[in-house]
Image (cartoon, rainbow, N blue to C red; front, side, top):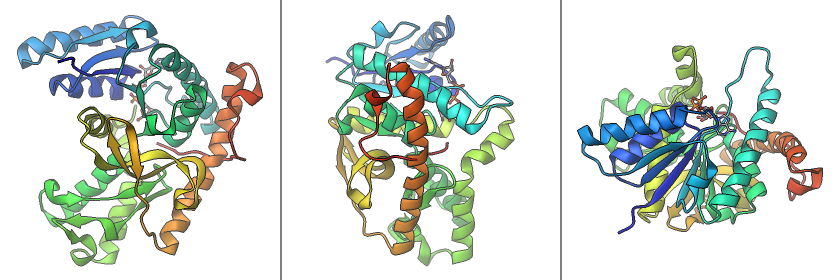
Length: 333
Ligand code: APR
C-alpha cells in the first residue's frame, strides 16, 4: 500500500517538529522544504538516520526544490519570517504575504491536488491568501490554530483540576491570540461542563492565560515562538485527513455565511476527512460569543486587505488576488 505523502514548506522549528512526529508515527512519507540551502537536506537526513534507531520506515527527504512536493496528499505551510527589530507588524504581514504568495504558486504548480494546512501567522489571513492565489476549493485549505488553543486551554484546566488531560475536551473558536473565543460551556471533563467544576473567576483566568498562551512561550524562550504544541496540533489535523477519521477539530475554515460571516477564514468546529474540510459545525452561540467572533473577523478582514495588496504586486496586478468582498483584517499567532 502506498504511504501518504506530506510536504512541509518551511523547515524551521515548527516544520521540523511536524516532520519528526509524522515520520515517527509512520503517518506519511515526508518532504521538508526550505528556501535556505542545505538546512532542509541536513535536517531531513538527520531525521532519516534516526529511523534506524527509532525503528520507523517512513521516508523523509529535505530539499529546496518544489518539484519534490509533487503528488503530496497534504502540504503544510510553516514558511515565514519572524519579526525583526525595527519591523512593524504591518511590515511583517506584508513580507509574509509575499512569501505565502510564492509558496502558494508553487503548491498550485507542483501539487495541485493536495490539501493545504496553513500554520504561518497570521494564519487566518495567510489561509485566505493561499486559497485566493491557488484558487483551490475552500474544502482544501485549512488553517491550524484552534487545535493548539484548545490544547492549551485543556492543559490549563487539567492542571487546575489535577486530572488527566485525556478526559478534557475544550473548544476555542475565532482568531488566534487576543481575539480568540474560548467556549467554557462546550468545554468538558469526561462530559461534565467545566462551569460545574470551576468558578467563573478561575475559568476567566484560564481563558486569559490561553489567550496569551503564545506570548507566554515567546517571553520564556526569549527568541522564537512555540513549536511542540503547534506541531502536535498539525499532526492531529493531518492524521484526521489521511486516515479519514472525520474528527471534529476547531480549524480555520473558509466561511460563506456560517456564523453570519462571509468570505473569510475563521476558527470554527470542522469535520476533517479525506476530502479536507467536509463539514462546518454551526453552534448556537450566545450574543456575546457571536459578538466576539464578529470582532475577531473584523480584525482579520483588515489584515486580509493589507496581505492582498502586498500579494498583488507579485501576481502582476492588483485585481488578480482581490478579495471577493470588501475586506479589512487578519489574525495574530
Ligand atoms: N520558502 C520556504 N521557506 C521559507 C521561505 C520561503 N519563501 N521564507 C522563509 N522560509 C523558512 C525559513 O528559512 C525558516 O526555516 O521558514 C522557516 C520558518 O521557521 P522559523 O523561523 O523557525 O519559524 P517557526 O517557529 O517554525 O514558525 C513558523 O509558524 O507558528 C507559526 O508564528 C509561527 O509564522 C510562524 C510559523
